[in-house]
Length: 553
View 1: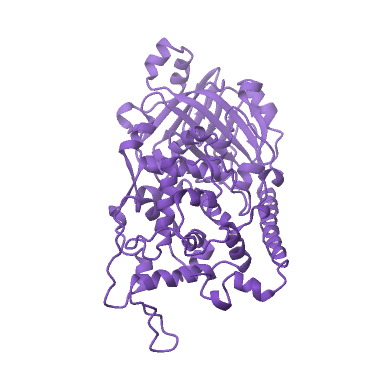
View 2: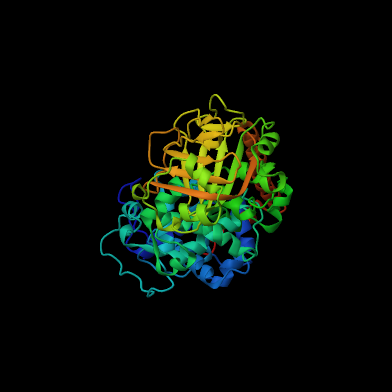
């Protein structure tokens, strides 16, 4: 059956069955990419017909991914299969075709998708979750019988083909594999045409450790990776985490899919993007990938400069000051430590110096705290603090503007933004370092810390720290994901400061990378000029002649 003709000119097309709808949106997907992109795609599929089906191995090869583990390959294949059946994502189970891969590219690109579905408010994040949750690999491949009445396509699109999102879940171990892939590809997704790291298995386990922080954010009942084997992630958990804690998480997914629209010769190696190599005990590629889930990739991957590393320069306020205070631009403070689960036991039997910190710091009572499962026991705690102003001594008044941000990186990811200026102290009289706290009271060698409702406090020896989160009322706002009142004291293992460029430098870097993307498109057009006959070019793209319906569809 074909598409039923409209009764009135200009009226919306009517469809008789699901097959008609799929074919219509297949053709629309082909028209949603440019002629150079379509020709590059055809070259990448090496003479196959757009309607040909492909296997999981063929899909991984087309995406230029090598050594993908079996579970991830199965997840990605099912993911693309769901998108291939758009907009009948819930009802149809057609095999993955090359035009289905093309359709996936269009749907995962926000700019293309809005035009493709004719809906400016279409929720691509929700579509991604549904595609992860609808596991086509385990369902019976049976088409829904055709409806006797014409189908309301706008309603089908708006309701995601009547998917009941509240009933869907994604196994936490599958979500962990997916998020690990996003982090693994992050550095190689700086531009739309940057060449991906094909061997995704390289360093996979180290990226998985950082991905687990995001999974625990989605589902706080998960403590270790073993918990993911018997846990799930709901849409509400996924959506809340992506929207508030890691808004850039899915960017590598879009770029990974769109790589099929570029010839290998049109891709650029990241080594050609003039990215300085940065590395330390804390600053590794997996950490940078996690940072890039919420900070601009231009900041994370191109503008960091090492200012102070405690392991190299010594853990002291004086060393910190000598290395950092000359930097007249924004910086990122990184703190890594181990949570102290029993204050008294640790102070009495393991580290007597900790008792002084307990005496100086007004601790919360245990009965006033609600500790989430990921924080229980001896856990790794890690924080990043964005400091927008140059550092300075604050023995009399605080500094820090309304762009100051505390980001908890481990064991979960949560963002705490400034509610007002005057939120950082660097007290050289013995008061230590604090973010979100009031100026400490220092008299004679005695210190009285005054932590804010949301605050990070570091002692003057850079040995112990405490993070408090008791709600609104201070100079830092609480996060939006994790409920409950809590305070975590920890032994500092690493503390580092990295300088980063301001808005002008970031804008310059962004323009450079946008130029690289424009160059790739220009090269695509130049390559096409080698085809002498313009009509032959159009026929190859499926826009005129016998293939005008969209190639061999």
